[in-house]
Image (tube, rainbow, N blue to C red; front, side, top):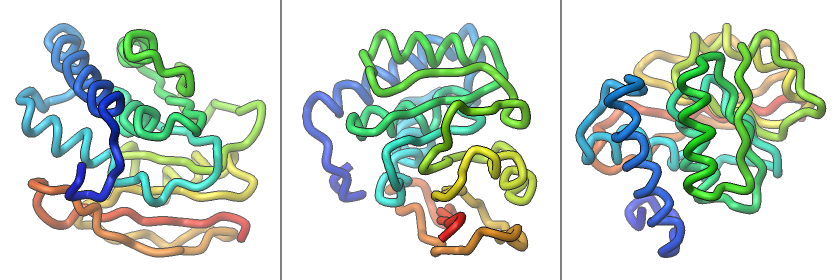
Length: 194
């Protein structure tokens, strides 16, 4: 965490460890992720999720296609002053996320089971985050109704960014900077309505 310049007190580190333990425990029965060993889980999932921290904007964040609670749970652990909604259509994954929220004691996170295309929020979000849910152009079409104005953070592999739809501008593309994860992973920061 220090290498990534992420401030984390003892409670934060303990909660991240608890999340990893829950993920490993539930993974055996629920097949939540292909990653099983602790070191890879830490770098590829937890640190990768936390690499989004410097780019979050506003108070309300939605994690679209949260899967095993990534990146939403690590972000909610590290940012107790923000509200997180973790959205996923898979019942077993949302059950896992709900159990994590309960066991870790995350008062700032909640889970909702629904496909993103069908989800209509009671109010808009300030930041949308997603890791590899769909191609970027498809994802932007799905999440557009979730924001009036705000930020979309996309985790990119080696592929580039598609042409942006109207109303969006590229604020920047940044290296994820995850120690031990190799190179190539990037974060595209898109602004809507600014």
